[in-house]
Length: 151
Image (tube, rainbow, N blue to C red; front, side, top):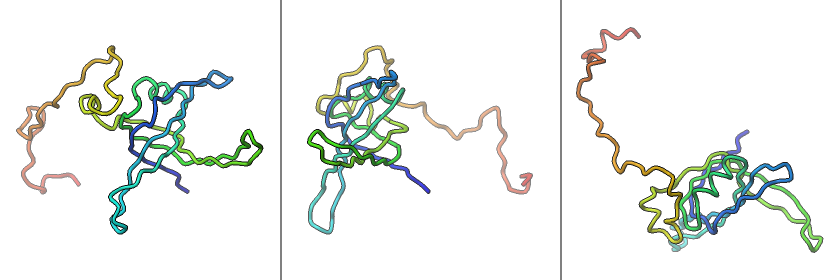
């Protein structure tokens, strides 16, 4: 069986780091994910997805992501049942994050709402990657035909 969820969206609020009684870091946050409906004439509809992150992932999210930040989440879908304060039985559906990625560069996130806050101790990234060249390298010789390949 397979239970994999991949989402990309914007944080609805600043995530807050909490700790369990065993001192395990955890954070819960909600992201807004757009989906399109071409057949109904609507351009898009927003789904609000609840995410839970544990341990190092929770610390990473609370340190580097803020309200409005674009985030990519890979994890699994989980349901849980609980009783609310009024005694009603409820079911929650949430994504348990296994991996979290930046959904945009620092520069583009600075223009997003409430983004632009970041840890000044993080080293700046290079704006452009080194150019890729297919020109010959001294370490490898070019194979002209398939006849010389050993497989």
